[in-house]
Image 1 (cartoon, rainbow, N blue to C red):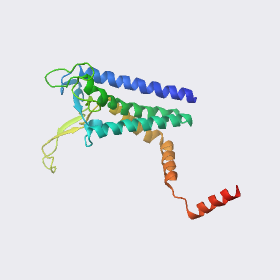
Image 2: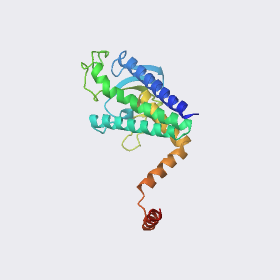
Image 3: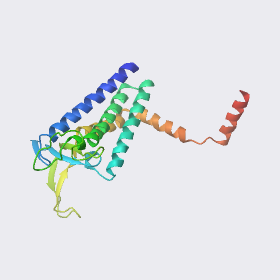
Image 4: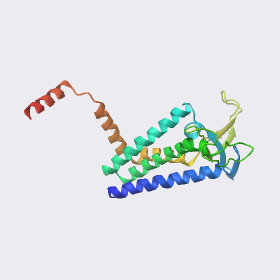
Amino acid sequence: MTKKKSAWLAVLLIVVLLVIDQVIKIAVKTNMHLYESLWITDWFQIHFIENNGMAFGLSFINKYALSVFRIIAVIVIGIYIRNQIRQGARTIYIVLLSMLLAGAAGNIIDCMFYGEIFTASSPFYVSYLVPYGHGYSGFLTGKVVDMFYFPLIVSTWPDWVPIWGGEEFIFFSPVFNFADACVSVSVVALLIFCRKELATLSVSDEKKNEVPSEGEKKDEETTSSAS
């Protein structure tokens, strides 16, 4: 694939994934009460929650710091994708990096704008759009919408199990969104199918951090003098 086609493929894929992510989130946010669940199967629910943190509802960083970190990460990934396209990287590598960027950007959109354009979600009423700046929060402090819940196994820990004995056990309890899925799938696929590119990246970083030995410095000085 030519570099121009790779660039268009990356842009198209990022746009399509972002649109899918936002359509799902807006549909859930404006049609469901907070914590409401729609049972699709016994092991799959659309369960509406919101979170302030990272993927899968994790939260251990200040909200502003997390949003700024996400924005910087997306910019860095975008620059890296551009450089890889210019260097003629494999199509699969560009596709997976684009998925990673789209997933990260999808949750940034929630943080940047949802607080500005939506009313707060509640278990008692459905959120709705309001004029920009009249929402439940400010810029960069909006909440991320999550909805996919896969309680594949729901059981109870045996009484003899320390700490958790007798308590409910749920295998795969995190609630996540389409953007989270893009990030997770792309990372796993990169580790499986693009180990060569990742190894090259790691070797390049090591070379950048290497301190030239005395012998290398002398060789460089000799070469410079000769020239």
